[in-house]
Amino acid sequence: MSVGMESTGMRVFSGGIWEEKYGYARAVVVGERVIVSGCTATIDGEVHHVGDAYRQSLTAIDIALEAVLMGGLTREDVIMIRYYVVEQRHFDLVGRAIYEVFGKVRPACTGVRVAGLIDPRMLVEIEIEALRA
Image (tube, rainbow, N blue to C red):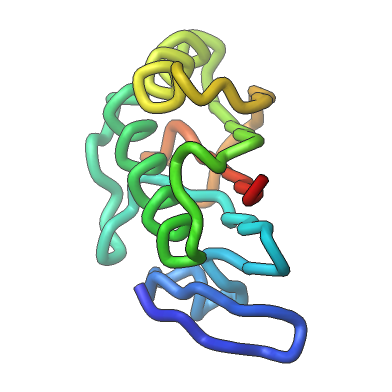
């Protein structure tokens, strides 16, 4: 990941293919807040753990937390998680992954079922927001 400064705040870039193609940053840091774009289990342009929503969730969370760290905050600073699944049966699998990583932090959380993600092999997308207290 790389970090760039802009007039509206610091930007964190992971080098992911969608960031460049669609013109967004992995995360934006404004003041004491880090807002992380939706993360999937895509690494170097390839979707990992095809067919496994739980492992895709853990990978997406790792990518999001790396952006939080690059923005100067930690897992304990996470205040909000939003996740999107393409199948109803994946809610509990994603929830289990979130609990394993954030069970002691207890951020706010919203889960939404969607018709699909940008690549049909993706089963979950996760956004994270962190705030220094």
